[in-house]
View 1 (cartoon, rainbow, N blue to C red):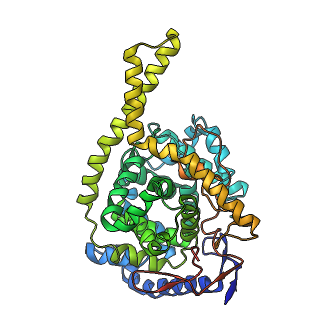
View 2 (view 1 turned 45 degrees about the vertical axis):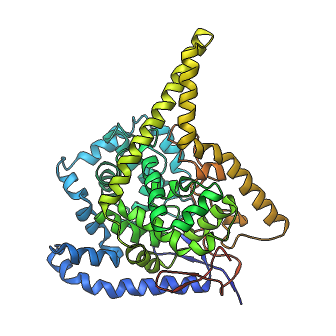
View 3 (view 1 turned 90 degrees about the vertical axis):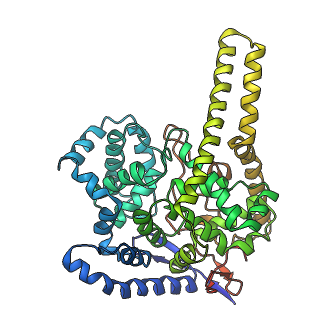
Length: 462
């Protein structure tokens, strides 16, 4: 029996399109949060979090009550301590200095396209608040400045923190400077590239059949997961689900990004194994993530369904992959330098040509392979959409106008490549978290199954 989608407003003010069964899932998760709030009451009264780390982790993994997130996030992330090392007026000073930020134009452009469906973030007041935080941070940390994806992270923070700009500023600082892998938001996204390669190793270990399948259809995991990591899932999951991910991220650190990625892949593994086209698989998986309203199921799978994930294991992979990425980037530099010298001298020497060829070969072995496949993948996705259009079909979880939600970009190539730095043209509007959710009609019987065997409705792979 087919279900018809309805549009509702989530807890953070985002309009989302959901199936009735998905709305039931949302309400069930909300009820669980209300029940858990009782556990937090003694600590609210004392204005102090539990000293027992195991107890605190258990509480946070079950979800922080929305009204407590400002307090708890600032405490567990280290943002409160970071703020305490600066003058009380520091944020105001940075806001004033941010008016002359080198990234001002890029931030102004991006703020206009950040969650345009959200009534406050799309308003002059909301966009001004977003600009202030981003510009202030760009001068506070001029080594990083501003990188696209920060806009959606801060935008979602602002609505979660009841528009508290200063808290959003310090939480962004804690993320970029202390929590995430170094270089995640560097100009060449070096840290993000390392994380993608580490994730690939974890998939090979935890989900070997899926890893082999990805290789067989020439799908590099970075094509799918780069946006997950750069945006911290801010435009990839429904906002209410993102908050649960961030609860754990602020306390447990970046391993949560790996756990959630592996959980998403595990939940839909059997369905992905039946998809033989990389473009179609990416489209379906994006829709699957966008409709993950059953946040309890996702987090339960992340924590209990993928086995142990010691930070030492992640760090070991990072160390190995850091060297690979550094060699790849060095190869790019050698090639660029050789070509620049050749251009200025009007020719090339045998040594220059050899250096350029060696650099090109290194790129092919590393990230170059990913970039080479982007155009091909875009063509596949376009072909798939054309077929669906001619058959008068829609993706199982189609976005606005029946399109494919490719956050934060609107083309398969842009969505699968690492997010561009702020010096490039502004992206298309970032969809509201979960705005892609729901379809006009979908068979509710072919649902994906979580680790615990619980059925998830509205399966985008159906």
